[in-house]
Image (cartoon, rainbow, N blue to C red; front, side, top):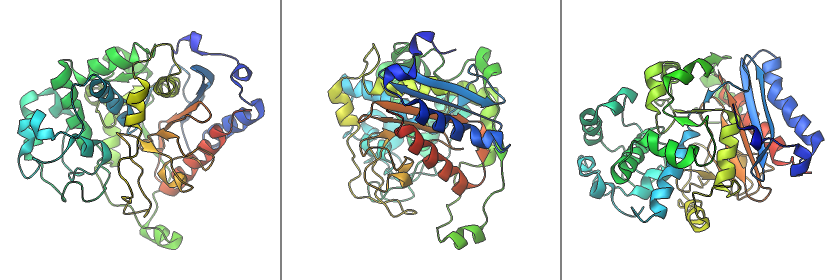
Length: 382
């Protein structure tokens, strides 16, 4: 359970009771209607939790897989090593991982890993391969480019984060999982934040389920929006996170397991609002600077606004980047498969996390839910 010292009266944090009730009602809506088996949310400000609740088949003791929201933690772990001057994002990956350089990958920079401009979005890697060092390196060496690094943006669901995790291990001398635990989770007091969840915690994890009907090609055509491409993020791949071996690996691009409270408080830590401050102010300024310029997403046609491993809300099209219309341009975070939400908004001091084990097959409904929730969360300051 989350440390009770983090809980406080919402009004003491300047949170509107009326707006918080609206947010709470929206979180509960699709659980109440029978679409989602459970959902959990947390809202935090000034280093404290204003709200932490679970609806449906779960409790505040339940843990959830946060999928790609994990990328913020993997990235933030690397920021600590950058802060210490132990590696430079402008260096080539091959200088630190020589085995990676084959098949034209020798000039890829560390920065390109963070910004999804590295050119190998579909590179295959089974989670179990991570536990075999030799097999891990064979995988890295075998990967081939889909396009020239730096020439475009295409979301890399897991591949680049495996390399960042490898960099963390080689530079720190610790396992990736231990580094996140020892330098982020425990210093921040987040006991239920796991990337590599131990077996004795698995009984608490909400089982992933797929719900609703998938949209058809005709549905997308009728809405006038492009149909998303098929990627490695399949139903079978997501269901694999119900298995012990995958949970224990802690996939750096998508295997974080925690409560919504720990996730929201992690973002309070990134804003420097917790007692322990692992990241210096200038480190965060550098990490949160948009590095993709005007590079656009090929599906939405809008600038991707990628910083070092996280997305920055930016302009009035921020809803297309996973934020609410009411978030400030400086909000930053990273969502996850199935509708997981995690962001911080420095203008209001709020951080918000929403997790569910019900993965809606209807991508448009899922996206609208995310915007609706973030809209309500972002205006909770009285």
